[in-house]
Length: 150
Image (cartoon, rainbow, N blue to C red; front, side):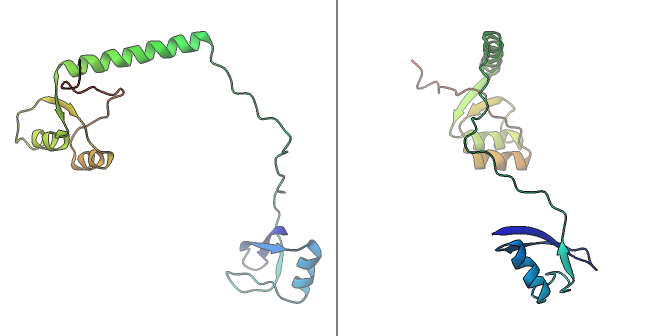
């Protein structure tokens, strides 16, 4: 099958047509079987189109670049700083576990005194909190609940 981009002369509407060969297109055009799907006009011609050239199947893909030791050291330094920042933030935060959404809403609406809290929440519930205007953010690293820690 061959795919041609076609266009009608009066409206310049571009559409796609599938044919068994170029000769099939010419034959159907001569018999008036091809019409514009937008305006119904039978005065249709091939539009300029880019050829579909498939990728070579025996070609090797580009090698994946290997990170240098310097890149890995930078990445590790950034990860350590993130971990330190999270650790510092959690020092002044109370673990509320699965009651996170309930507690965050209560604080947001003034039903509980303001305090920093962290806990567990499902992604859909986190989105709902954000839509309500409750300030929440995911932590970059998992937190081990205090009752589970050694």
